[in-house]
Image 1 (spheres, rainbow, N blue to C red):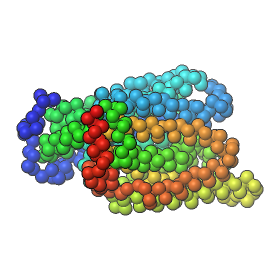
Image 2 (image 1 turned 90 degrees about the horizontal axis):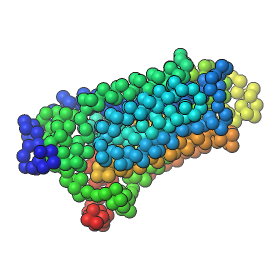
Image 3 (image 1 turned 120 degrees about the vertical axis):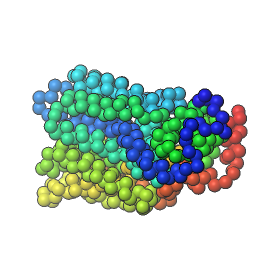
Length: 491
């Protein structure tokens, strides 16, 4: 029945195709929100790896630590999780297509919990590294599925807000870790991080249906219609939407090799390059490195305030600004918001670099300015969290063509993981090579590039459907590229 349902008859008996879909949508928004919350918990779990790494490095330096690590091992405790993430993203390229995003996110909780258990219960550098690797592997398998699942199950008028939830929950994970690190030893923090998010994800996906696009790709049309009705209400025109998804997928029904071959055409290559470059700027802006090494940075800055409390302030500011960005993203638009964000980050990071530079020359000159690093970092995090951070993930969910979203999404997440691993791994070396001031000036320069990139490259996708985004910005009309797609699919 699922694979051979006729296009002419109703896929779900009793669904009213003639009813007003917008009216039904109003009554079902809460399901989209709850579904997005469960999915966003995946990124909360992932961000706990970054926050926990900061706590771990901070507490291993304290007197009485039972685990000894060398200066060369320390960056690996921070970045080792993202080696696993890269491998997980490679596996996701094949697993997402075979099993579907919902099932992947459901089952990733098992190895993820095991990885946290290894970090909590087995002392020593190598067990810690292995546990972080396993957690990174598990999260890497499903992190791209999270954005895709939300974009495919949400309505256009709330999609921008819901696509910010993963970034908001990622910040919540950081704040949770810093708060726990202030109160508890790292072993107990690892147990909580392994238990709470995984339990929410496991129980949530017992109720949530599979992605309608994935179900259609497997010709399970009736379950796809039921999935759409679950998220959009009983009066949503599910049959028509299923046929529209099916038509789009049938036009480019290809193998992995053929799908990769589409990158020869500008309509497919351009959105991938835009998102990949944005992810590069996202990581090399230094914000994630600042959070990963937050405790260490504040100890070096000698602000006179507890380093964990400073890190908590940053995470709390980031969370509040993430929430504030939901009210701006569909008012100001993606391009304007990310440009303003980049401009403020450029200035505030330059100020932090200047503070470290002056202190290096003569510490007495900044004796009364110990508040400046924390204040400037608050400005940086606020600006980043309103624009660069959330919008990077919004355009990831909006700009990829639906027919290649799973594969290309996994490729971009692989790229994101590689760049994140790189900046976390080389951050200590950068501070030794360029000094603290030079490192922050480098980050400031990257944010200046962000402003130019947003103004001249990133398209505006505010209040557009996924199909409209593709036709307005990447497929203006029937081009040679489309004919090339057809030839590729026929091979």
